[in-house]
Amino acid sequence: MPVGPPKIIIYHANQCDPKKCTGLRVVRQGRAVIIRDFQRIPHGGVVLNPVSRIALSPADREDIARHGLIALDCSWKRAEAIFRSSRSGKQRALPYLLAANPTNTYKPVKLSTAEALAAALYITGFREQAEDMMSVFKWGPTFLTLNEAWLDAYSQCASSTEVVAVQSDIMASHTRKV
Image (cartoon, rainbow, N blue to C red; front, side, top):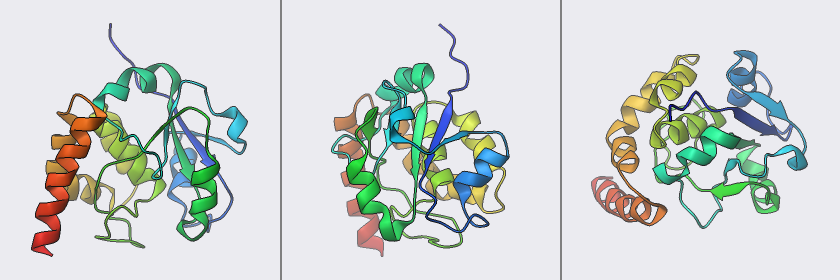
């Protein structure tokens, strides 16, 4: 069955500078909708949450296609409370990737909301939507290029367990080089 582009939802906590917020920019560009209440997160939607014990994998594609992909947009300085209180939807953590956004360039895991959404889309087989989302930022294509080999490796996995195994190999290799 052909799958159309998934619905992208951003829970926005109003904790960041609106001029620098990648989540708000994605919304302004018509690539996502914003919500401000956890209760509006679709029950079957996939929620990107770095404190989740389950890694995002291509196995999440159908849930994303049916119910949406949700990002939690908040300040990294106050993120812990938001991430810990998120219980709605299917909570998933992204695997190890490097940021390309101007605030956290080359820092592992500290992705902007747009980077997190694009990575999730890419890993779950929505590569065109990932590229489209990153096209609205000058640095956006760099994020995909910087992480392309890793994103490709994660997108070939069948399960969360396989993603974690690939991530372990990537982290061991990357931290040896640094």
